[in-house]
Length: 111
Length: 113
Image (cartoon, rainbow over all chains, first blue to last red; front, side, top):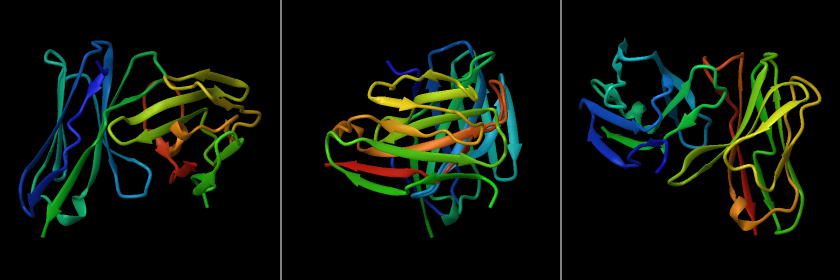
């Protein structure tokens, strides 16, 4: 079993839809949770960064972490065609140097 | 330009040849990483380095060698390339510690025939 599980999609939604992306993980030592966005033929870029459980909002993006369920989510409101990309969840533990990534979910937002 | 740069961006080679992928960062970040990205696997860590002359293996290090004689450079060498090493390779850096943002290069797309 992988440490981090993420549905690769693809996920196709109409413009303006609310998008929900999710990851589950097995290592209870993870404390730092991230979402990276990767456009085609580009490197990943950090989108959201959260510590421990709770919610974090940044514009149209909301990240949620539920450590009791080992489940993290990214919500995108009013999705735009420019949101079409691959979204990778990532996580790391305190004192560890390694960041573990999910497989990434490909998202297509249709105009 | 400031940032993290990888070269070459595209490379085709043959089985058994040695290949070196270069990575250079201008931020003086302590930590540098090499990942490979394959469909269905996401990003998998090959090697990382905490500082010059300090390197350690990741989860998929077999067949790869790294060095870090200077803080800003972190080359990745495939000593004898195999078809299974066909992949997109990403170099990344981080200022320090276990937290904080990873900054990625644009990637090097390697095909081994």
